[in-house]
Length: 276
Ligand code: ZN
Image (cartoon, rainbow, N blue to C red; front, side, top):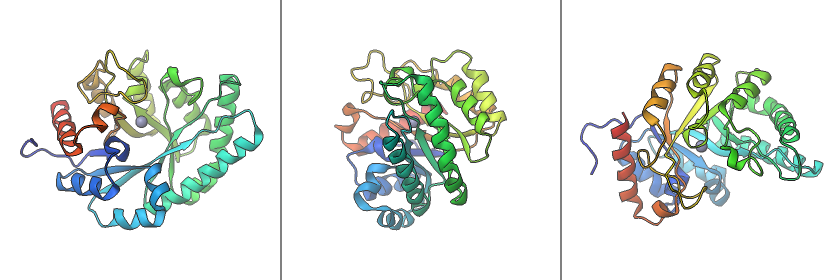
């Protein structure tokens, strides 16, 4: 059951977390519990179109925190790189329509080329879409991914690398998305979080937990408190870094998707309350 007097105004849920719900169901459930933010996944917009999605979102008292997810810039074929750029430009237009101020970037990697080459393509990709992002006033958030994804999903695997890249590009519209699932293990994490905040680059904060053991490295993420991530310490560092944005629950989980989603959402709220 939901605790009384709980404040969920800084809590945001990713639509993928409650994947079985239609957008309207998610919005009704989030708003009736006083949840302040929603991050919209691409599959929702793919299904409904950006205009229809925007129309629905506007009917609810909730803030659209981000559009998830762009990127995937790395590929050995030039034509595929260009396709990715075009796709990201389309996503930026969609983000503008649905009122999302930020696009989360899963930067990309490809098993047939080196990480260094992938990183060059990522840098180039971000630089090419940046003028459009700026003209639409949409921020680009580099999300470092756990190194187990370095072969195919992202060649940016630590917060340090994401900080380095954001500093290199040096633009107020390019920053970092910190997801605890990916960086909880990182040496010197506290200092890298503080560095990110000091640069004004900490754009978003994603929370969940790393279960031990887990049955699937993509779709068996835990609820906060289910696993071994020291969320209390990370929260303290994020706060010390000056971050005042939403705490976004992003959980891919076959186990939780098979549950009654309303009960799952109540569990999320319970775990959130224990953390704060
Ligand atoms: Zn994330």
